[in-house]
Image (cartoon, rainbow, N blue to C red):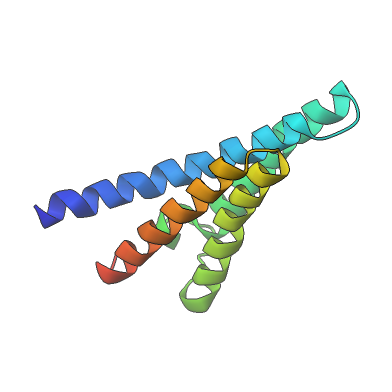
Length: 116
């Protein structure tokens, strides 16, 4: 049963990662004075987030080009997932931002507890 819960927690982590990319896109498409700027931000922000995650955080660091470990990993996750939550708040969706942050905190605590 514990293995099932651990697997579910890793699935939640993956869904959170996707949620951050969606949040960045939502922010981009709702920000900016005109359609070309919204398009640029709506497509560019998720790409920027994805590049940072691919370089430093992918696969828990195992698949990253420059894996962040220890406190660097903690800082990366807080900034990355916090950035997703802030993007949702800035896009006028504070409830969704709070939910993203809360689910991340629970997920991170369980990953720490279970050595994931």
